[in-house]
Image (tube, rainbow, N blue to C red; front, side, top):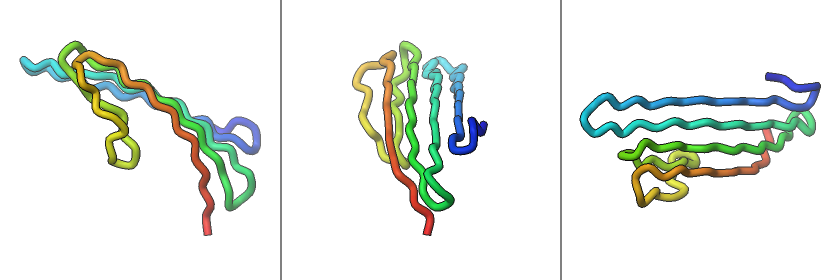
Length: 88
C-alpha cells in the first residue's frame, strides 16, 4: 500500500494449520516498509514474528537460508532486517 509518494507499506499474515496427529501449526506475521530514495534506489525495513504451536519449531528465513534454528517446540521467533536496493 503506497503511503505518501516515497513509501510502500507491506503487511503479511500466514497461517499453517496442521490437522495431523503431530499438530505442528504456526502463524507468521510481518510488516515491511520500502522507502524510495529515487527511481533506482530504495531502503527497506522488515519485522516478523513466527508463533509456533506447542509441537512446532519453525524459524524465520532469509532468502531460503535459516537465520536461526528454534531448539524448543512452541518457541516464538522474531526477526528484523534492513536493506538497500539499487536497480541498474
